[in-house]
Length: 274
Image 1 (cartoon, helix red, strand yellow):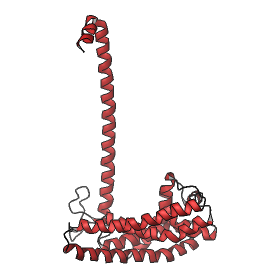
Image 2 (spheres, rainbow, N blue to C red):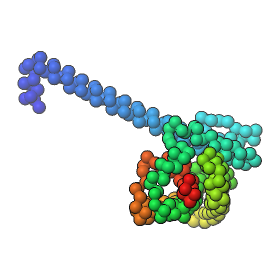
Image 3 (cartoon, rainbow, N blue to C red):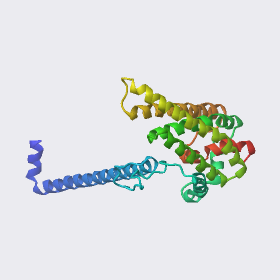
Image 4 (cartoon, one colour):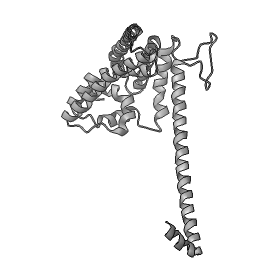
């Protein structure tokens, strides 16, 4: 505004002071936004590299410049490129010791089970979890393998290593209940690996003769959708029917890490009041 500018200019002191104030405010706004922007992109970079690292461990990548380790056959080093006869022992031990790794950051062992049980006090809700938890795990194993774009053999090794890991984690709580876990989730893991292999081969055959074919991404997308649908429906039944009609509090967002590790154990242990 020319009039306001003229009035301000007529008083050099006020104009100079106002100019400095506006410049200072602009500078601090710019500085704060720049700091926030740098923090945002730094966090994105960190999480992106963590994702690439775990993806590399699982499926390997010859073009990965971060970890260009290869074996004598020039194949990417991967946790899943071949089966190790000691896998069951290694991952069971890792699961057993995992409690001590995460204990500074969250509840573990029986304290974690008690925390999880606070939202599952009714028998009805507990039984619903026992019935539908295997279906949730079945779906999760499928879509998680598809997310990392695992071949059927890699997916099978990945699923069984998780099976042994959770077994080791639960052995640190109660060996008797863990035996029940081994029996029930043996069939869940076996079924997930067979189903993944069957669907993978089916969609390879189908996609080769389909206008929808878009390379392997089509196959993994279909597998991801199937697995996600199974786990979503099962978890929704547990949350809506189990919690609502069992008159229990809703699942807590803060309890998600706890549920990831101990939901399977609780679905068994509540029968034994453990």
